[in-house]
Image 1 (tube, rainbow, N blue to C red):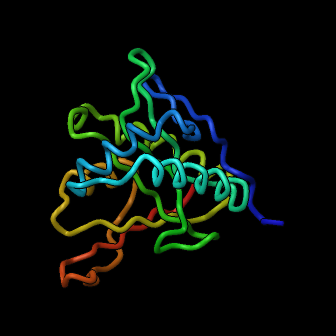
Image 2: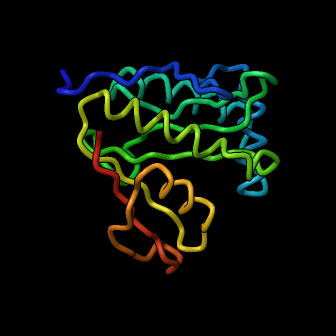
Length: 168
């Protein structure tokens, strides 16, 4: 039994709905991963990832949530908490959105509601790790209260910036 309350798996903002992914999201998730990695992933792998996220949600009380715009109803990315380079007590926030929606404040809006939901679980701190080249992600994280903690090198020898946010 965790000492923390589970994070809600349905969050809403003025323009967005964040919720657990479903198998119906698999093709769009493939396209998002493909936009980042070039070749992407298979629909079968995306379905497995979505199923794994549901198991993680039940086990840890948090996961990455799929983001849809309220008005359009379209899948635009994901945002949520994961263990990643963090821990169950101090998870990492993660997000990724399609390039076509960058620059509209959606990542900040989603991150803000996830930070609020994380605070409501009773946690005291969150982490984020960002590639040193990723200025847009730094802006999002700074807007929602993250501060730089340290810099390490990733597997390719590039800067990985560790950021932290004290809750609430």
